[in-house]
Amino acid sequence: MGPNDELLGVVVHSGLVLCRRKDVVAALRRITAFPTGLVLDTVVLARGVHAQAAGRRRHAATTKRRAAAAAQREDEAAAQYDSEAAAQREGAAAAERHHALEQARIERRYLPSFDEGDVLRLGITTSAGETRWLDAYESTSSATEDHYRLEAAYWLSPTPIDGLLSLICAWPEIGLPETQTDIILADLAVRAAEAFPLWNAAEDSDA
Image (spheres, helix red, strand yellow):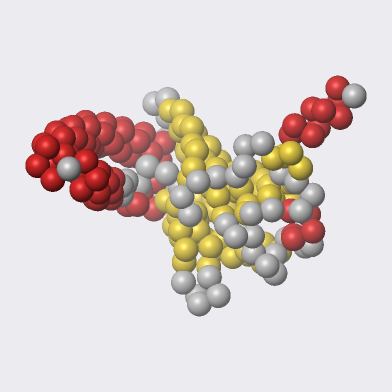
């Protein structure tokens, strides 16, 4: 899940290093506010052995996901066959219910594992003192023998009422320990409400 693609959000924060170690660094490029949440754009740079570790993680995760996708397609094809057979025995309505339940089980079975270690972990500290990890809804990466770059966008919803963000980032597999950074976003609710539809801007320019 992510922001409404037809809204232009408001940048409320930019340019902050989250964690830095020798030859590896994670930074927050910007925070963009929307009425329903925040987009957190991050970048990770690594070189030397840290870049090699990140590259190995990416390769292993990609191989695992491809294998999982192939297995999921096989399971879905088998479920469809069972559904068609059930329709002949029990009727279409019962078969549809059975297929929906089986499809949900298959999707849960093949959800990506959080500990694959091929992306920066980013989360917030809740009022209860627990860490709520966020999902990267989009990411791109590039790698050479000695350099690695990851850019990832995370979606946080709902928008924090008090504007206080306690961010937790970690990627221990490539040398970034868990680190907390506190950010205060003043007048966040007011600024988030300033996001507006892109189509409105296009219509104004055409007028």
